[in-house]
Image (cartoon, rainbow, N blue to C red):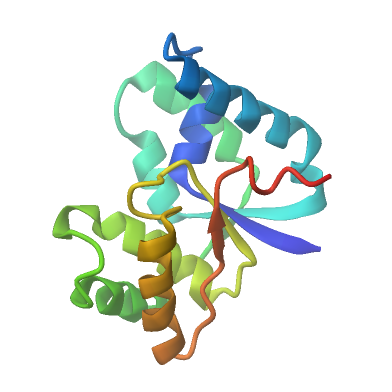
Length: 156
C-alpha cells in the first residue's frame, strides 16, 4: 500500500466551513472527495508538525482538525529529519518564515513516504521549488515524496 503524508493545509480544507471563494470552495470539495473515496487506498500519516499546526488558531476549528488526525499514524521527527529540514532551509529555497514546510518534507522524506498531500502551492506543491528541494533531499541520501494536491492524486 502506498503512503501519503497529509500536510496541515489538507486537514484544514477538509474540515473548514465552506468558503465563499469559488476556488477555495472547489478545493474543499476535492479534499472531501479524496478523503471519502481515496484515503482507504493509502497509509495516511502525519507528524508532530501537523499536530502543532492543527492545534493553533480558533479552538473550535482546532478541535475539528485534531479529531480528524487523531487516528492517523504519526511519523517520528528523527534527528535525520531535523538535519534534512535544516539543510532544506540552508539551501535558501524556502524563506525563513516557512521552516515548518521544510519539516513536513523532511519527515516525509526520511520515512520514505510516497506522496505529500497539500494545498500549499506557494512553497510545497510548486514545481520549481519542489525540484530544488528534491535536489537537497537526494544530496542527503533521501528520496523526496511526490508533492501534490488532492486533485492530482484522485485516481481514475
